[in-house]
Length: 263
Image 1 (tube, rainbow, N blue to C red):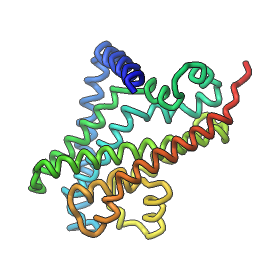
Image 2: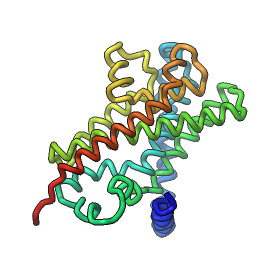
Image 3: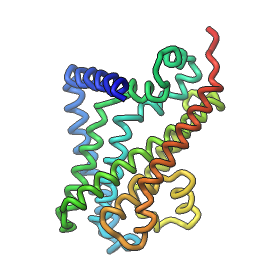
């Protein structure tokens, strides 16, 4: 474990150097994030100007959910988005040869190599939205609430990683440079809204097939203590573990079928 941690830490240090080298890009990204926050708030505000609530959720609760979704996605983006985005192309181009020749687990190696500190701005964007919502919801914040928040964020981020690794690993069989990643980003947009606004078939699909409901909706239920979905919301940490284990299983099966380009 110390061996893997030391490798990861060295990659983190290199990533920090890259961010500091191109600090102007980071600053621009930071301010672009602030603009995106304003756009998000404005869009949701326009909706709630016309309706008092959305399936029992008020304006600030939906903002809170958007924030949770951004934080969980941001953590995933830092630790695994580059890995899942590049996996299909690496399979088709034979770039995994280099990975498989090294004396380290290929799954962990690719996670470590693709660590991306630049995407921490997404986490910041989510924190701004959550802070804005909390200040207006008058939530009581104690040690219990902070622990639930940490567990919810951790669960959502790991669920993201599991979903994206599973789908990107299908490229071992499909041999497609982009794979099936793009539709996941479209589906992800629907995960930031209350699940109960969708038909039952969509709710089932987003809970048990591609469990995007566990990246924002159920974690938000867990944090806000909403009773309607509390039981299934408490399943979020277990879903995260199951999703990641299944993703690792599919990836491991795919690695065994990997064929180099031969050039």
